[in-house]
Every structure is written in C-alpha cells, then in structure tokens.
Picture 1 (tube, rainbow, N blue to C red):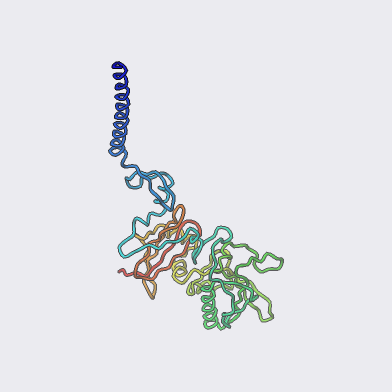
Picture 2 (cartoon, rainbow, N blue to C red):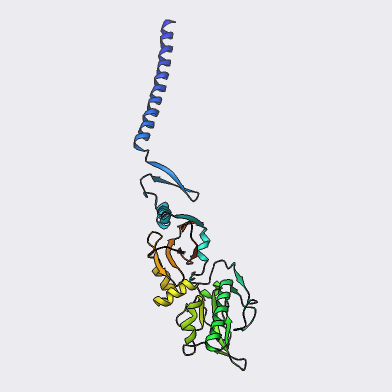
Length: 308
C-alpha cells in the first residue's frame, strides 16, 4: 500500500509540471509577440483587409496602390475638406474624354424644345446636355448679331451618320457624351452645306467664348462643350482637350494651376482616382467649386481663389 501511494503522488506531480511548462511557454510567446511583433497589425481600406506594418506606407502591394493613387487624402490643406466620389464618377463631367464609346451617365440630357430662333435643327429628335444647349443658344445669337446670318444648323449630336449621302460619317467617341454638336449651314433652297476650314472662321475665332472647343482638330464641324473656363484656357494655350488634360495632371491641390479670367481668379488641380472603390476629393470649404472626371483615372477640380 505504501509503495502504490508513492507512485500515485508521482503521477500528479508530472501532470502539474506539464501544466506549468505549458503556461510558461504561452507566457513567453505572449511576451515575445508583444515586444517583437507589435508593429504588425491588420488595416481595413474600403472594406478590404490587408496585413501591414504601422510604419508609414509600408503596406502590401494592393494597399500601397490605394494610398499612392489617392494620396490627396493625406495632403488636404487648411481650409479644405473632402468630398467622396464613387468609382463610376470618373466617367461623368464636361471634361470626360472617352477613348471608345462613352460609358458614363448622361443624367442631364434634354431635347431642343428650348432652342432659340437663331439656328436650325436637322431634326427635333436630337438630344443634348442641358449646359451645352444653353451655350449653343448663346453662340447662335452672337453669330447672328455679329454676322447678320442665321444659317447655322445642328446636323447631329449623339448620333453617327454612316448612311450613304450623309454629310459627316466619322465616328467620334465623345459624341455620345451629349456635349458635342456637329454643325452645318442651311442653304436658302433647304439643302445643307458642310462646315469647312474655309467657312468656319467665325466659329474658330469665337466658339471658345461660349464654352466650346474643336475636340477633333481635323473636324471643323465638330464642336464640344467644356465650359467657358476650360475653353478659354485651351484656346489661349492652343491645346486640344487631350493635351489639356495631360497638362493638368501636373497640378495637385497643394500645387494648383492658377488662372485669372476677366471675372474671377481660379485654381485648377488634378486628383487621381483611387485604385479601387470611392475617391475622397479635396475641395474648398467655403468656396464654389466644380468637379469633372476625365473618363479614365482621375478628376479635375476648379474653384474660385484669392491670390496675388
């Protein structure tokens, strides 16, 4: 009996010793993690998680792309806040430049029921953006006042006429934005004449005053509404829309492009779209501003400014 009792006591001691060893290993592991692995943590961006170090911008490749693409979030100047734009918003605005058929939203399309009497339509079935319609009314009235003519006609807007006998058959991707107009001249006998380099002098010299540019250099009949500010800058700098958008990529919210019109001073800057999800765009807190996507990878912001 005595020897058996001593054996039982030995088993319990072994069990207790094993428990103590396990607890010790756990404690050492926790201390090690606390001291040496505390810099690793999980971050969440746009509802996605990724392992990253707390040292600034040492994320995985995917999260690094998000920070690099949307760096403006971390460089918002005093007096600015951010406005969140969805992923599809890059396809909307007066400066979109689609490489193929426009894929954006044309929420402000209208017909020509509100046109004035200074120009003609090939058909009332044409559609156009409201802002472009207002600009066309102003352009046609000025054309009449300054030349005494009212022979301007809108031949097409969003359509591409490829039928035999059409004046213009070229398929320009930006037609489908709703900001474009293909012009012609209406003759006294009811026939149409093309707008050419020879008879488009007034348009070439004045279209920018009303917010229009010639977005396709070789097409004298094809004008595109971009707004008075951008049209004036492109006319003054002799830039196409593609060249203009490329130039603006060099200017950020912390180093914007400064431009002064007769009415106001403005700041213009580019904000790259986030690699995925929404983009937080820096905008001034107490000033008017406008935003347009470029249809590919970012946004153009322009705002009133106070500077010498």
